[in-house]
Image (cartoon, rainbow, N blue to C red; front, side, top):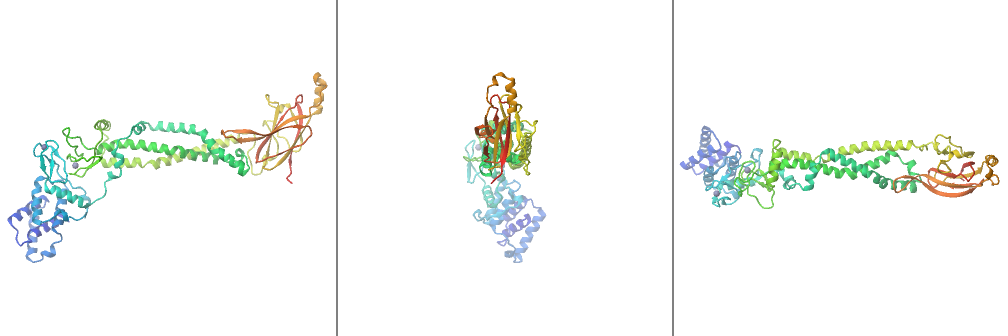
Amino acid sequence: MGVEELFFQISLECCADGKVSAEEFELLRRVSALIKLDKDKANEIANRAVSTFKSGQLPGARTAGPDLIYQQLLLQLCADGVLDAEEDAVLQSLKQLLGSDTKNFHKLAARDDQRKIRLKPLLCSNCKGLLPLKKSEWIECPYCAKKNNIPASYLDAIVTRASLNRHKSKLHEIRDAVGRMPTFFETVVSYFPDSLIFFLFTLFILFFQHYLNILLFYPVSLYYNKHLLQSFYEFSNPMLLAFIKAAALYVLLSIPFAFIYRLKRKISVLAPLQISLAAGAPIIPGGPATCNNCGGALLVERDSHIVTCAYCETENLVGLPEKWLQTARSRLSGVQKSSTEAIKNFKHETGRLYETLFSLAILFVIYGFILGSLYENERSDHFLPQIKPDESQRAVIYTDSASRPPLNFTEWNLIPLTYASAEWKSADLFLFVNSGERFVVSWKPDEQHFKELQSKTYYLRDLPVPDRMTVAFYQTFSYDPSGKNVMKRLQSLEVFAEKEIEFTAEISGYYHLRCYFPEHLPQFFLRIARVKPD
Ligand SMILES: [Zn+2]
Ligand SMILES: [Zn+2]
């Protein structure tokens, strides 16, 4: 309802009894002044009301009942905060004239300009101290204990306020967060610089790295061995492994980290928010806290962090430690923001968790790629060739050192002592075997060479040609529970010269034979042949 329409309706009510008394005329004059209506305009509207009555059209022109008129007038007057004790008299006589009852107020949809119903803070008539406002006929002065009457229109305004359908306050959504002080832990975390958090984060990754390898890869290696019948090291995809690890690290570390990060950001915006919302200190110690907007006295209930000012409806945060407030205020002086801005900032900062998690996910994808290429490098650096689809790795027998040429299957190959390492008097020969595949091994001494030795060396002269050799059979790469690739000894036997022994591979992968040179025999022949499946 517009101002002019409202005044027209009030005028109609005044002349409803057939005449406009001097009293009523005076009331209309004061109402028009209160709602800031032009004098000529007011006269014109009042005259229009009188002529409407005279023409007998009054019942049709009345669009609002007395209660709605009074409610609307209160809204009008409270919007700019001018309602004070002096205006109370006007409102009360009008209320009497209209015969309206606040109990009959209806729910109204509030327009934007009617969001706030502001009242002028009341002062004690005795000591001029600030009085809190509550829904009762009188209030005791918190300073001098004098009972002060609360103007009836203030109470009516409170009823009007309650009759408005309004949006919930913005503060409501975050009241739990702003209502309490940060804990010691939260405060400590908030002082950590971002770089330190990232540093700790990296340390964590390094620390977890090894354990994660065991935790993740050992079960995978078992899966390769038991179900795929393949050796884990040769057959697993390095990129896949790297990404399994990166994903696991991401889950393990980034989520708690993101929460810490979020907490830190939250704390950093919480203080400005709390300060901007904090109620003012009492003007005289011991008095009520004051509204941060209108300076009115607040009525603080127990166990409540947020108190809405009864005068201007601003929400105030109470119960914050005064000492903390003082230091925080001085620390943040100059960057003080409005509470709306602070709330917005607070929500923005706390809402950045997903942003943080997303950017961390990108970091982990990059990490996965780097790790994957490291794994790939490590594998391609090995002298045993990688597994190829064309199975070219099966073609030859590899020797311990890449500089020596590979040997052929089914041929008698000469193995001199140069194949042995300095410490171990043994030669290692590597071959790739598929699961279930068999191969045979046999050896014989290089008798020619032994005889030459006997002719040169006195103490060998009467010895027979050595005819026994220890041969050990290993799986070359086996992922063990400590997270390392180790050689796994499968079998070890003593083999007579020129006697064939057969080996069967359980899983596909590289195997090797370790042939221990018999005593006094620096050179022998070895033959390895694959057994054709039946
Ligand atoms: Zn007082
Ligand atoms: Zn206020």
